[in-house]
Image 1 (tube, rainbow, N blue to C red):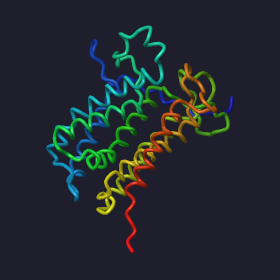
Image 2 (cartoon, rainbow, N blue to C red):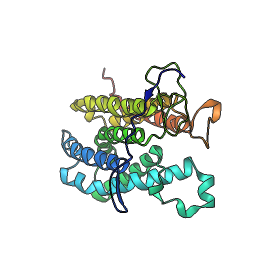
Image 3 (cartoon, rainbow, N blue to C red):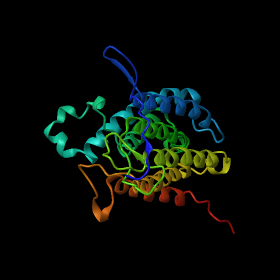
Image 4 (cartoon, rainbow, N blue to C red):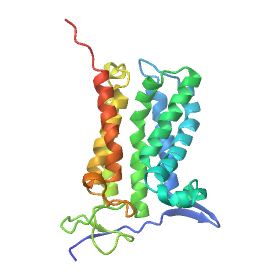
Length: 267
């Protein structure tokens, strides 16, 4: 076997007291929601203001439900429909793992739309500010995937930073969770926050949402080239993975939003 970096054996459970266990994965969700919430309070008030800080406080409950319910139901429908048809009672057993970003994204979109309709907020303009903090949660989620030793990459015997994952067999693999944390988390966050610093771009209704959708779709498709497909799905149409196929509509919708908000030229 060629040289491979040993996988840092971090216990997925941070603290356990009797039956109560605090897991890194749960902390990743909490950290993403709390940090995103604090950042969003300031973003929505930048000119042109789209909401108040107090309205973001109320929105947190809605978005949390959208993430959890959408993420779980998305996993059930996109990744394991056959299994849950035979065991439907396990569909809400979130403690067994299995969350889908694309399902969570749909859950957040629905939660945002309903909340904004109830509070008379422009939901597209509000969404422009909210998407800027989503990469924070994506970053922590991918780091938690790495700590759990799950969703590892494809075999990479010639890559000097490849790792042997406890559940991935004896072959060294890409630490694809870290690649995705960098692209979907750090790079996308820097891009969105840089664009959001411009009042002119903030005023283009739907522009930031479009950049997020297209940016995440591109980052996810690239990351999937290094990530091992789910064993029960494998490669699908034209050798693409489920994550890549689900990301294509995001790129198309994102590009449409960006082009739709393009400033009109003046004679």
